[in-house]
Length: 404
Image 1 (cartoon, rainbow, N blue to C red):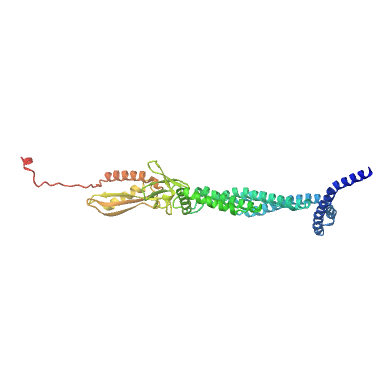
Image 2: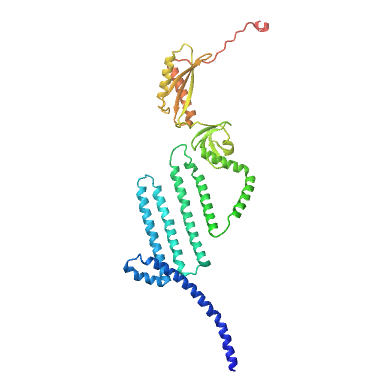
């Protein structure tokens, strides 16, 4: 019986021993981490004033307290950095009239704060772990949060910058109000692509396979949507080259004439004077000859009123009357001033041309009508004859039946 009890005791000791052996190993690893943390703490002790040395020694003996102190210090450091950044940049932004820089400063405060805070959290967790998979995973999670925070901040910030640049009324600016959606989409694609690439690299995923798959898929889509892509790229070139803008009155060599109402990525829309909307694919309009009547140094457009008077009329009086009609017409622009030119001698009239400017090409038809009416009434009041072609027919002889 004694032998059995001794054997049972031996067996029980054999079952307990593995657990006893594992615990010292874990304790040694934890002790090494604590020792490493203590050494780092001690290296900074000499820079502290005497009142804080007692607190510092306590922190050095207990890693948990040290981690809490590092986390609190990181929070305070993040607050201080954000405050200093905001104060410094706000002083610089006072010299600008735009409010965009103030909004950008407010947007950047959050990602800067999160970046500093998460960095110190990673440092705070280090003394509590033995390193390895857990610590690396925790660090990757914190880095991923930093990337996502910056991405969510840069997306609205890029749109804000584009809107600010689009407020410039310069005609040949690449970024205009109508091009903001295009550049906003491009910035979103670029930022999301960069963020996704950084996350894949961070987690050890090779993005080459994904890029190769996207390339093959892009080739297939390119063949399937060839015409759509042609219109898309033509729309990008139209936006970049800016041959016209919304509100311009244009003529195409294919005969279309109207006011530009929309410039999309696939097509351009014109509203004719008959209130008929024409949709033209960008691939067609990009290769067409475009006459922009609203182009030039200003939007004003010149109209020509052709008038013929009978031979023998006082030409100086004709010039004076035409200039007076144009100068007293409210819809005619005073600068440049109206002018009259004699163009030649016709078959039955002396030909003149009244040249005057209107504020917008879309008014051409209406103002031309009113000017012709005014000139006709004024010539009638001044007894100036407007000739018309006449033909005299001479009959040499009549048929005998008609003569009888």
